[in-house]
Image 1 (cartoon, rainbow, N blue to C red):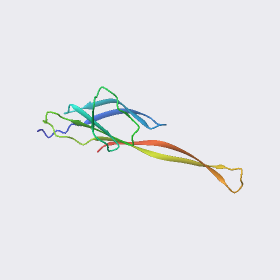
Image 2: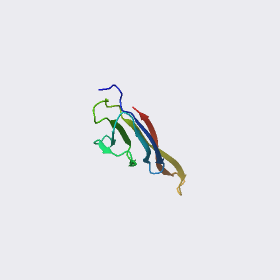
Image 3: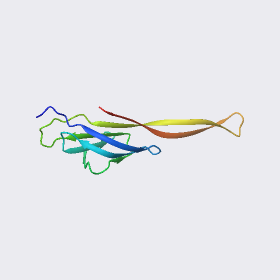
Image 4: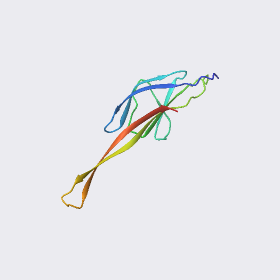
Length: 112
């Protein structure tokens, strides 16, 4: 086999409020099959022609050369994290405060 690892190039959009990631373009080099897994689950074969839509905390994409000519490369990983936002609001009781909280996802990405 060749020493060329099949890299995956991923472009995607993200809806910040719910943290949903949607791939807009996936390209495979030196590979012919796209495998995707979410949150360390099982790898699933996906089409590069269809968007991957996920609200998982971790999405991994890897290219595999089914002919065996090229070795398997490292997956491309997209990580979501959760940001907690809070504010103390005045209460009708003079000695108390109300905690108002929001949860938002923040995306970290990288090829590992």
